[in-house]
Image (cartoon, rainbow, N blue to C red; front, top):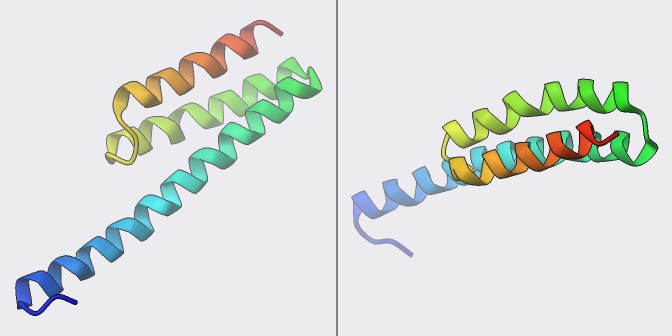
Amino acid sequence: MANHASALKRARQIEKRSARNRAYRTRVRNVVKQVRQAIDAGDAEAAQSALQQAVPVIDRAAGKGVYHKKNAARKISRLSRQVSAL
């Protein structure tokens, strides 16, 4: 356990950031899952609308530093390619 005041503060900050990042990651996983379910169902219209909802969520997570920007771009690119293939 941390002994210095600055180390204790850092531990508190890390806890807060981890919780926030976990929420962003969960949100991204959920929207990606919705797009994939629509793709698996073969419903092009639902997949397109789910993708439109997913893209800003993924971009926002990348902007907050939860995901690397290239990781986010790769996720979006792969999802859009699958949706346009329907």
